[in-house]
Image (cartoon, rainbow, N blue to C red; front, side, top):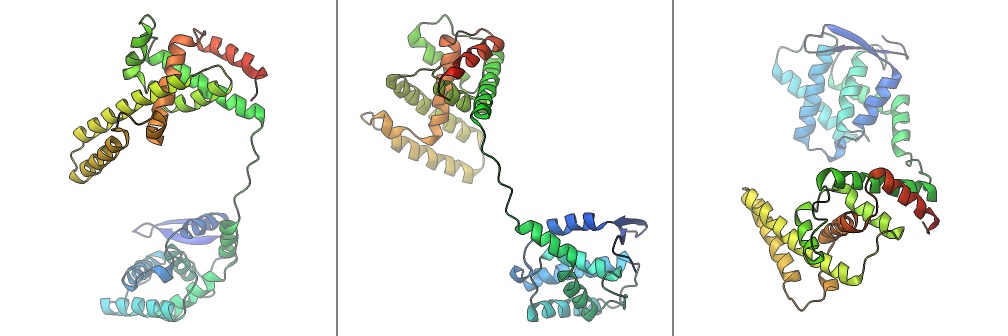
Length: 314
């Protein structure tokens, strides 16, 4: 029999390697097991298979001889399933193995052999255990409330995102279109929408909030028209590259819906703006700013410009 400070377990198919599990380790095991499916929501067939697996593991755990007749094993496991149906326990499937292994290791009193009755006792005693009660308490605890970020933290977060975006921009685009005429600049950005990756949108939000990036309604309209074109091209490329008939059908439906939404030329831009294209718009606007309006030539210079904007409302 083990004491309350450790649980002797035999692991591995050979039953040779022996190690101990402290209550702390068992607490972690139970907390993980509590995320599995409820026994009451498990079919009889699946529950039978779970019991049978744990039944075999019990014998392996203590090198206990299995019954010679497979029917005896099936009968015992079926009886355990019936017992759980007659007397439902608030237990989850992955907890069954823990309960049975604890039982054969003497955690719930002197080991008296393996039967449907003793297995039922193991499960009952496990459900009343202190470690499981602690695991349930921790599971039901509300997550700790995170303090709201301060204005300083919000500013620094936005600054860091913007500097990351500018770093990616410098590495990928190298201001390739700086000498092009204004009417060609937007077209030139076609191949560089994603040079800043996930930092493009937060960089736009920060620069706009700090009044470093100024944008007119006409520019917004132009960006949305361009974004719609780019998104449409992206969908068509996705369809061309995808060989799965189901996914291709989904993409076709998405294309049809998008075409219907933006198809009428007389529709105002405000009517065809969508969440899907908003991210592209922010990327276009931010890249345009970095390419033609930003006075900084390096990340260090941009950091200085951002610091000067701290006097503007955060």
